[in-house]
Picture (cartoon, rainbow, N blue to C red):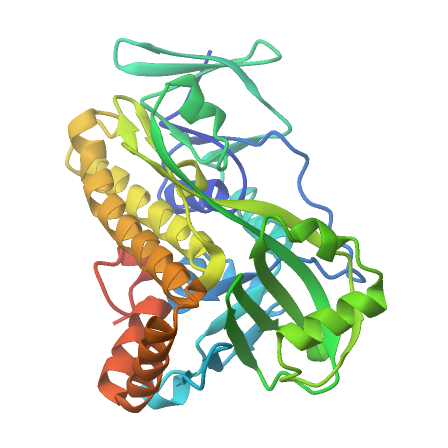
Length: 401
């Protein structure tokens, strides 16, 4: 039996970030990842990207990961949002609040590769990859994880950071609340006739939002939310027809679509675990919550989970308390569950509001967008919250003094 302080199941972005945050402070961590580490092909663009907030950037800076990531990502400084059903629009510009950027667009595999590379420099972290568990049992004040090869790991806490279909969550029968949106997201890299101007563009359509996120060399990554009854037909379009349909949906805001990469899609659902913790077990990231992608906040919420859970564990250790005990873990749950629920509810409200085609509601929302665009203090406050510059942030995500 191999003894650790914490066992993290899931070596994706969230699990690896948590391992870094703990390992750099000398907490012994076993990090289990079922898949081989990602292989980076410099010639390929991933269809899917993440919009990394300033709070997430600070976490990566604190963990000595950001220098590697900044070379591969693309910053965006402005955001333009408008309603296809009217004249309402709103613009966000980082310069109005004295910030150099709103965030960065980064490819998931590059983030995971950079964090795992940092993990492997930390003596306190042991990476088991590829590795899956066959059994988890709680014995006295320890959780024992049995791997498929028979290896037994023991720790005071097991963290499930293993995705939306979390085997850890299922193993412990931790219930969730699920809502199907009956929408799917289509993602692809595209090249447009006009440059994106380091701006994130989003148009609200009746079937769901369409976003163009700026990448290097003038390319953009699209996130096109469509009714689930329409996604198959759009995926099947030949490239010229896809370009024409996409350009029309985007009102040709950046001219014609000149080129595109492979398309991927997945169904959308909201999922929230009723509890993030139980004795000796905690959930983080997509294992605890799945959110509508219209504001690109999913990975940022998960990174805040990792930073908050690390802070709770380190504080408990400093006080001589058991970090796997339920009273300690409930502090993490209280801290993060309310914030995550608030963001999830706000995204649901936006999705419902902008997909409604009733004339009175359409007129009201367009008026609201235009009014918000002129209300600079309110708009700046919204921008700060979206960037992770406000709220009850973990220490890793706060602005350095």
